[in-house]
Image (cartoon, rainbow, N blue to C red):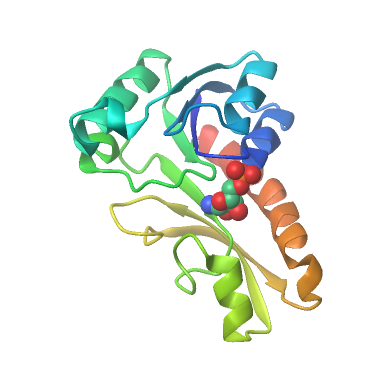
Length: 177
Ligand code: GRF
């Protein structure tokens, strides 16, 4: 069973749902986001774990990990989840947490990867699916696919299209392991 962590739009969550993958639960660090609406529309259990409702980040992460494990989650997918995870969460799903990122890591980690690739003037950027560790987009790379920057006006759309294909493919493989 898969647990998906989200923070915003949830288009990657939607791609996982549309691929028919066994998503058991969706957890968000923010209330009222579109991703939670998508979970509800798909009939998937969801909950928000805002940081300000907990003493600290570790306590939030431990509570979120407990909740996911109660739903039978064995594989966690960060799909636009915008907080770093602490060991209180990471240690509960060793080697079983993946993230999708809109660049060819280790180039352009962080929240502004596409803008930074454009500003740097690179010809090629891409999409990475990687294991999650304590760092900012630093875990072991599982799959990467390059995307040409030109034409820049459509770069975001083309990167998203690759994300929505690559992430379900990798997750399907991991589910079988
Ligand atoms: C994606 O581009 C993902 O790579 C990045 O944040 C974005 C989330 O989009 N980590 P969505 O919420 O899945 O639509």
